Amino acid sequence: MPPVTAFDIRRFIDEQPVGRYQLLIATMCSLVVFVDGFDAQAMGYVAPALSAAMQIPRNVLGPVISSGLVGMMVGAMVSGPLADQFGRRPVLIGCALIFGAGSLLTATASSVESLSAFRALTGLGMGGAMPNAIALTSEYMPQRRRGTAVTTMICGFSLGAAVGGFVAAAIIPRFGWQSVFIVGGVTPLAIAGIAFAWLPDSIRFLVGKSGREAEARESLARIAPGVAIPSSLSVDGDDSRTKGVRLVGQLFTARRGLVTALIWVIYFMNLLNLYFLNSWLPTIISDANIPVATAIRLTALFQIGGIGGALVLGALLDRYFSFWILAVCYLWAAICVFFIGASSTSPLLLGITIASAGLGIIGGQNACHALTAGFYPTAIRSTGVGWALGIGRIGSIVGPILGGLLLAQGTPITHVFWAAAIPAVIATVAAAGIASAAKRAKT
View 1 (tube, rainbow, N blue to C red):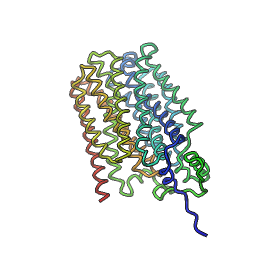
View 2: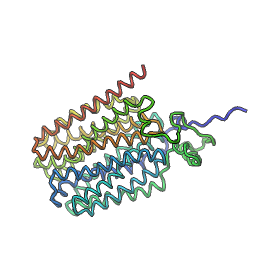
View 3: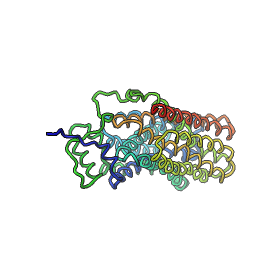
View 4: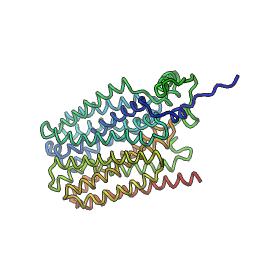
């Protein structure tokens, strides 16, 4: 009797077209990161009104903003290994519940201390949502569409941040800064309920967990209705699970150490830039005698540019899955950030340069998520993305604090943006280093 050949899940998914079931999963993940983006950007939009209402000076407001980013750092680092051990689905839903509750609590804050504590709690959930949404979307998509799928899904984050700008501009004058956090709290709680009903877990994760192969077969059957799914399932050797594996240490084995370190540099530098601009653009623009509502809308263009960049880069990654694309993207970002400072008195030029910078910084970040998820095997994918985001969150903490210090010292706006271009240049070099290392590995 011939031996039974195990059913290779990775090959099976790669051979299937993208169907409704996979689109449903990507959409659910995108909804979670949509409200994640709304809440992540909320402090930047409410900063001018919050500072005036609570009489918080700018050098104090920077650390308040960064308290949420500390929570995001911890959430990303903790949630990745948890998801690789217990599943993407429960961790993703739990994170949505946490940052929804944290946002509602933020609306009740009456002091700097309570504001910082509630933003840290909100950040804990926000930080854990992104790596698991990336991993789950990546694992349900065929290789030939993975770049577009992941970058498009993550556009939900930028869209949420952009929508947050328009919502904030509309409701803050009527209902106060607290209204933004109420909207940002109720929405993720509702989405978590929908995800609990509809969102499945990773098929390749389920195969490695005793007693859950029936769930994996059900998901495979929904991907390809009518195809017989055998009882014996497998993933390739690189995706197999080993009990007792130290997941973070695995990021530096199998010749992954150099690339992991350079990925961390990219995340640190780009998220420093992203959160510096997210947090301070409305304030810097309003300081140039531009109305606050206009400043908020101009900042929203940063997110819209990022959405356009993500869509373009996703299509490119489907054809050329290479860090060289990322290097070019970050070089573009450095140039655009440099020129924002020279456009500070013209709303038209500001809109062009801010949107262009968003294309490079946010679009590049989304592309980096796709490349990072593709680099790590399933067994450590959430850990790899989560720790990269966690290290990046250190940069996102530094960014708002650095911006607050520069502005408190009266640094000219042009010099502020010259300084902000430097991290993008460093990210360019790191991405080029990964691409060069990959090329040498193939020769």
